[in-house]
Length: 352
Image 1 (spheres, rainbow, N blue to C red):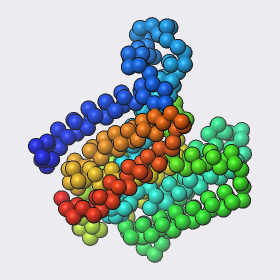
Image 2: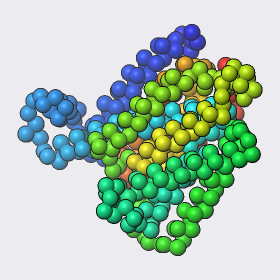
Image 3: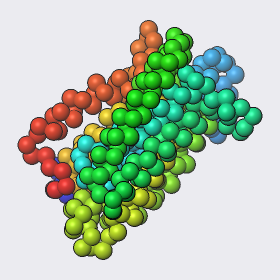
Image 4: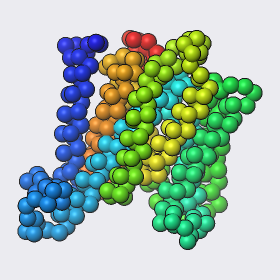
């Protein structure tokens, strides 16, 4: 078993689980409004298990803990784990250390859908069951359309390869970005622009337990599915020729993987906006800790992603003047880390 100093991979996983629980607990009483720890425990026990009496507490305090901090902490955990999972799969799928939802155009497609909904409107959803979720539905449609476009474009002229997937993603991302800018240019509105800017920079501010469930269910499904695919992900890291020699149908697997990851990204982006660097740097940090074997990399990266996102959200909502978009925090933290990883001579992608 691979060692990290004197700590085994299993020991590292247990340590990360403990840290994740501690950060989640900390997120339930920390923010712009600080709530005493004992009151948080009373509220959580009462709301979750019906234990104790909280009638002496201010309704505003109960609302802050139960309707904002608790679901927000859980959503941060889910978003971070989901983005890290997607980053692992995409980097193995295209054998590119820079692969993430952005390079394959999925986030750009979601951004185009949200831009359309915010600045043009989603009147075509009026009267349907989706009318209350116009931005989310349009972002989801945009993400799925972009992933299908990438898949279709990369399949032209023969089988899908990692190079064609990356190039197709860059093309689709550029097109989606251009159309997003065109919509902004043709439909300027100060209030709408503020909403769009905050969404594009990422935020967990408009969350609730319904959002947590909406994101948790797809995450659990994807985690279980890709756990069954770890052997294939390891083979993909060895290159197309080696994977084919091992009897793996790369073309079919890439079709399945890109659609599933697109669905996962679409669900996450619909509810939290565009959050960068998590799916890019977390897999690299995990590889530096446990190597490139996905049986070890998979759980470590997911836990690191959850911890990183919750910590970033705590920082984003701890400013007393006003909350800043979480995407800014992840970029400020992620860029230096990624730069260090890229220049570190001992780091290798696909080896170790």
